[in-house]
Image: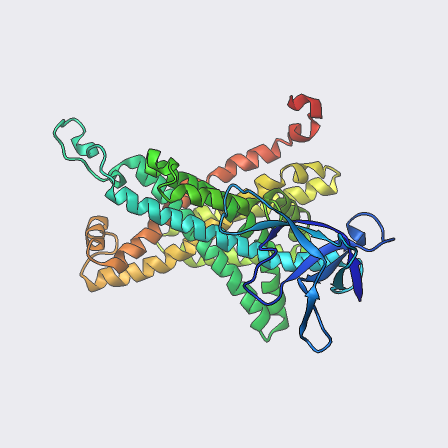
Length: 436
């Protein structure tokens, strides 16, 4: 049906422009007389130009742009305030059924949340590449082997241990983001394309569970990647003449819009984990276990596979811990620890992705090594080969990223488990006045 709307819609990307002939805005609104709360909200489509019966464009609809926000980042995108119905003449078409607005909006937002994960990958990826190139070019200090030689030649900062640590942290996360977003898209394709009903349901469920991870984990860690890019640039990174400070400003919004990351965590713990009585979550665990099992027989990767297996088991254990807490009436434990759980799950999923990549890379690298007459475990000769063989360098990098993440980042989940199991609820029990 057709309705007249009156009200304000905020934070609207490119709310008005002349790049297309018409603009259609989805708008949440409450029909007069409907109940309070989210259950009474409907969703409408508001066109810039009303459409005539013959399909041609008619008069301008009754909405105006009240303001353009001055933002921290994303300066290439106009973020607007829309004032609708100031003259009582803003027409809108109901989308779907009345009072089903939130249900429809969540369907739209699920796709957008995966898009935010891709945005996080893009900005963190370019920040990493800029930092990597800068580290290869910037000369500062001498080699550790020459640190007592005052006349030693200056070396690129990529040769310094802490810069290498930061770069490998960034590389591992960016490559994990890429694998995770691509895998989620792959599952979405399987859910749409499979002729098997059970497979469609399985992959749809995996997408449901992974979406909060793609959105929240990738966006929060992408901000950290861009922060490290600034650190590698040093003082220049803090200056607008260099690009990395813009990447940090631009990526910060990713943890806020399309549902703030704290809301993603509550959605994961309060809804996604329990869908189909936990069957979707169990499908994801099954996929992770299958990958780990495949690489436990690989002598070069067995140690990494064992660590990932422990983390998958820990994730399953903590999911059961939350379920048990809720069943016992201690529902504040999963609510108060939803975000730490999401971050823990993000680390486990990333470790799974990176192990998978390392497994493929190990097989490819062994093929190159055998062809060159090099033993697959001869690290010195393989590293020397990487200087002239870009494929070998690529595969060595994949394996190193997995080793670093699984050895240095994945163990952080143990601290999260300890904190959650303490059942400390100080964040909930502190009175408002106690914050100061």
